[in-house]
Length: 104
Image 1 (cartoon, rainbow, N blue to C red):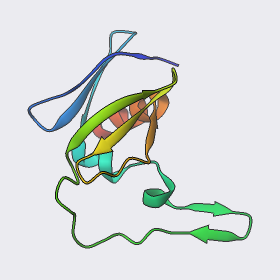
Image 2: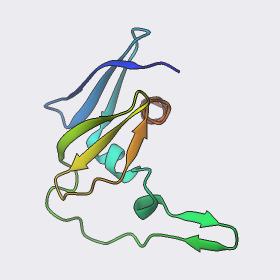
Image 3: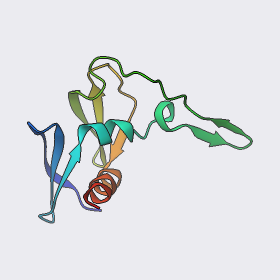
Image 4: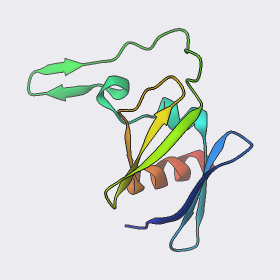
């Protein structure tokens, strides 16, 4: 697993991540929020029950703005968004995947 050495929000509304191996990822904030990995945003299935979130037709103020980024152990970050949504934990692997898929 590659780890970031630097994470910063850019003026172009993206998150720029510099990885230990020298590579970089530039993930648009809209993509980052739309792909929030939390249960509230992505849903979940447990045995015979499923929770599928309803996508709201409008986005509250601050929906795509980062308020704060907190480290979670040595494997992820928690992003607190401008609308106070804070339940998504973005692992290093997930961030690399988002960055790779956005480049395509």
